[in-house]
Image (cartoon, rainbow, N blue to C red; front, side):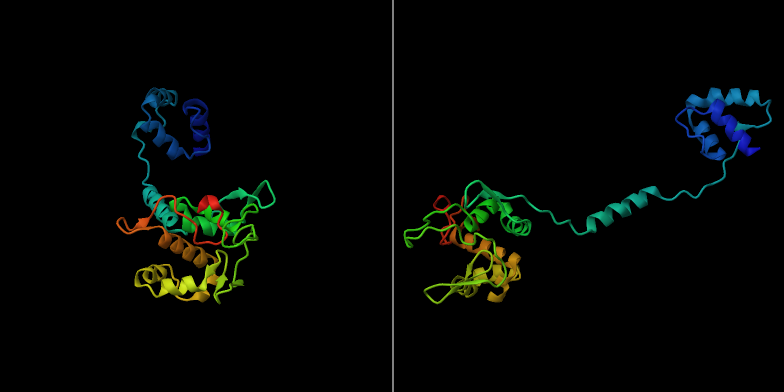
Length: 242
């Protein structure tokens, strides 16, 4: 009987928006709550000769899940989820002409540490650029501090006994000097940098490069890095960035 009744309601009464697979009690509830369907209900009652008093139908209580709570919990879950890693596309002038796209992992690290001051692309350009004589201190032109974007504990020895380590070629003497300065040492610790060995870690290496850039362009009054900072602390930085 219920099946036949549901079919009748679906075929003669329900607006097209109502799916015929909806249970009879839900169909009745919808009709009763839809003011535009009152005449249809009245007609249906008359058509059935009063055998089904839809107007007196009492729908049973249904345990409906708290949708608002579910949505709220989902929002909280998404908010607490770890932000997805993105890969920033950094394209710079190539050493052999044209352009070079910085490897994704390198671009990610540079963006993490320089994007807020809009210097990520400049940082990449310090590493890799067309052949240029970047300083008068050395007669030989170069392709950048680290044209191959090598990372890890790779070291380059200097004539003064210091070494340059990692992606941004962090100088051991510069590192030691900043570590002995209470102001910069505090900033280093805030980034988890406590030892020169940390310079083998790409993220800490680029974080240290950010601090070195800040130190060379620090505004003591505002306690911030100056706009358009000079990258002259890097031997192979192109002249346009000095």
